[in-house]
Image (tube, rainbow, N blue to C red):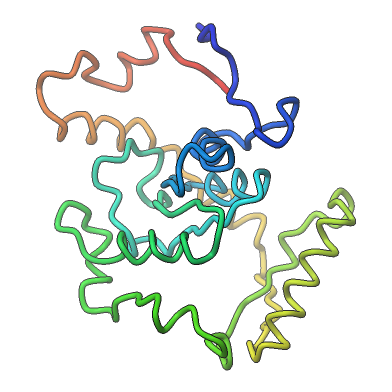
Amino acid sequence: MQQFPWGLTRNPYDPTRTTGGSSGGTAAAVAANFGVAGLGTDTGASIRGPSALQNLVGLRPTLGASSRAGVIPISLTRDTLGPMARTVTDAALIYQATYGYDSRDSATQSARNAPAFNISSALVPGATAGMRIGVLRQNINSEHADPEVMARFNEAVSDLRRQGAVIVEMEIPGLSKLADIAWPNRMEYDFNAYLASSGKDNAVKTFADVVRSKNIFLS
């Protein structure tokens, strides 16, 4: 595979460390103050991972909350689009601007009749009182988890509880098996549909064209 001469995106906090891949370029740009906020796409952890590694607030919205029109897909059954910012307020403002129905993305049909997200009611003292928040410790590899990261995680859960949130400790039977099943390799299908809908002037017509070109950069 051909590698581009400029190499990997660098983490502004430590150039020897990863940006988290995928939406890591957006995260690095925001962390380096090239922009106030940015948008990332998340199929597995591509908003949350880069945000965590570069001291940002990252939000992976529920599938269908924000339109993915124009976004090159990996798997439309999982792809979401969400904000990456240096503050909760900035992330909430971006989410407010992108939330809602878009006729170009059928997944947003569920948001058509849903209440609009409003920052003025979401970011107020007491907003988390009575809110049910699920905590899935089952998905944490306790053997390899960094002790300091786990301490901050537990601290955040305690903070939410003190602010009136109802913390629900979750347990999903057969989670690892479900995770394997839930990751279908449908990128080629979704990618071809994206190309077909984006016009006839594309130099690349199919996913196979990209593979044959060998012009792929693997991070």
